[in-house]
Image 1: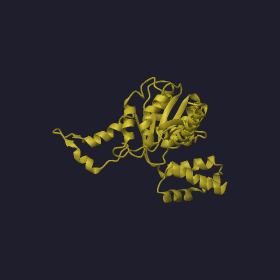
Image 2 (image 1 turned 60 degrees about the horizontal axis):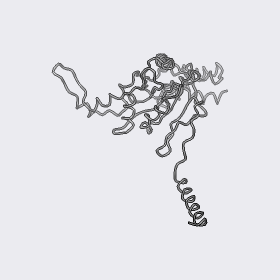
Image 3 (image 1 turned 120 degrees about the vertical axis):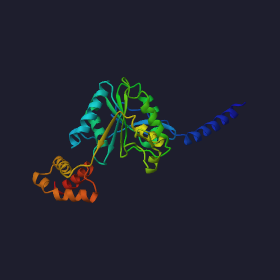
Image 4 (image 1 turned 180 degrees about the horizontal axis):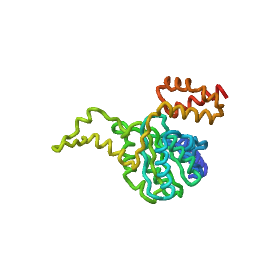
Length: 288
């Protein structure tokens, strides 16, 4: 082969490689382990931990009228940080009552002590095993956060989560826990027809059917269940007044906000902490 033929062949090969590179996804970026929070990102079949540049923070003192839930999850998180046995946590109940905010508050409180947060979408639940393996050699303590989690029949992520929860993830010495929030107690829809499979024993006991048992088996793998309830009117107003004070409203403005705050909640159909904070933002913008 002449030098000219070799040069032509190399040129063609380089053009082919350039075309292939245009079709192939780029390699995932290096992980910035100095970050406090991450999102699990996917590009094709590749996944990586993407550092969150601006973390949405909220403090424990900002969360009102969920004192019992705060105390339980704070205690569990401290145990986890101190490498004591700790439980995976499932938080269920009324929307806007502080479930996801409580997880963010844990990061704000203990990020300086080595706690890290990894947010994983429901669609990526099948990658949980890869995420656990990726961080297993790190010295930090990682909470995998799954917000507004629920599954439909046959979703692949259901079995992946079940497998991870049933493994060694929460054993003493591991550096990963799962904190999940959901509006469904058992993470899956429950139908009246499924109750028809219940069995009545001779001693009067009722045993759920196989379909119900399968759905309950996932939520039972979480060691801690925390329930959140709609706020009473006075509790809702307390939260409104707290945020108005945080936004710099005067005492007179805070006292005069009561009627509008109640109307705001009535229009939204909810007396939640989220609705209270949204009203406080609007009121403060108009009066400060």
